[in-house]
Length: 175
Image (cartoon, rainbow, N blue to C red; front, side, top):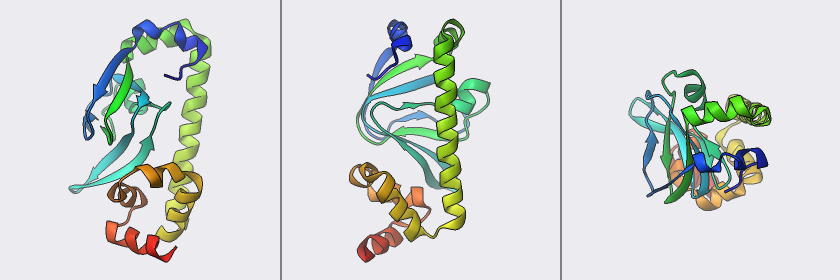
């Protein structure tokens, strides 16, 4: 598992969790009490919109995932977290994470950098939705994140791009 040197000190606080594909780790509307560090596998975040699920992000080995807004503020999560593949995760409880932040300022600084990167990525995705058509969004995805195209089932990619699987198939056939 990729952890910083500072976090290595808290390795005993982590608990290993193996989950099969399609496991809901956090349901939209629940409070996030766990942070997940992906050792192996892939997770996605998604929201429900009138019975349709819309994928908002994908996470892979080395990534850390939680509904950070919920985890840090004790508010209901705006989205669900689900495994797309069988996963090996290292988990850290909210309580233990708070102790880590209090005891290690360098971890707090790293967390701020992580949150800023996540914010920038969210902004980039948001503006891409506003200004680009689905074809352009797909081309950006292929250029910036080719591993997503290789690893993620097409219906999740379509959901992420805000289009139907049939539309995605048409776009892919044009390339």
